[in-house]
Picture (cartoon, helix red, strand yellow):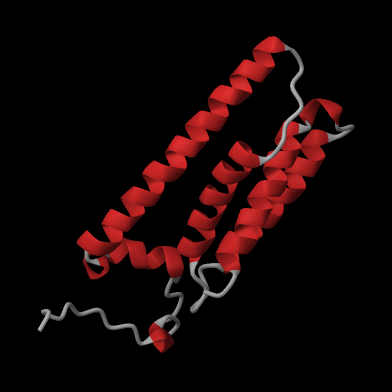
Length: 143
C-alpha cells in the first residue's frame, strides 16, 4: 500500500484548489480535466495485483473533505462566504462520521464475506492473475 492514499489525498487537494479558484483561472475546465484524467488512470492501475484501490479511494475522499475544510478560500460576496462556511462544517462532520463508520466496519464486518469487494482491488484477467497475492482470510477465535 505505502503512501498511495496520501498521494490521492494530495491529488484531491489540487482538485479542491481548482474548485476554490475557479473564477480566477483562465481555463479551469482544462485544469480540472487534466487532474481527473490522472485520477482515472491511477484508479485503473489500481486493479493490478498488490495495488490497493481502497487506499486510493478513501485517501481521495478524506483528502478532498479535509482540503475543502482546511484550505483558505477567497469569498466573492456575503452569500459566497456563508455558503463556504456551511460547506466547511459539513466536510468536517463528514470526516468524523466517515472515520467512525470505517472504524466500525473494520472491527465488526468480516472482509472475507464480500466476493465483489475483492474485484475492486484486483480483477482476475487470467486464472492466476490475482493468485500471487496468496491472501487467505480466516477468523480466529480469541484465546
